[in-house]
Length: 151
Image (cartoon, rainbow, N blue to C red; front, side):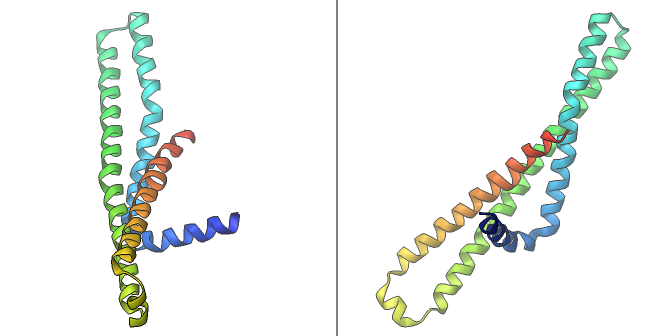
């Protein structure tokens, strides 16, 4: 099973490596956003503690602004992940479909006489959709949620 996993990761990385810089940038923002997400409950707890302790309004206001700023940065990081992760996933999916279609064009004519090209194209599109769903849901979203566990 481990060998299959490594093989699958290599296949996925083959398409992701073309967008390596953007992928690393997205993951860095996700990591930073996860760190911020881990701090938000702490700041919210501080605000509650200050209110219950009857602290000065200035201190409560400072922590409320800090909570709002951290919440805003976290939401921005999720939006950045959504936009850029979806874009990278779609581009990798398109690369896969183009590669498969190019392979189909390079096949011998006898193969095309026996098989319907529409059926073949449909399979390629389904493979591209699977790649898109896998990258978007597992690599980007699950990866983002997984980083929260480390904080």
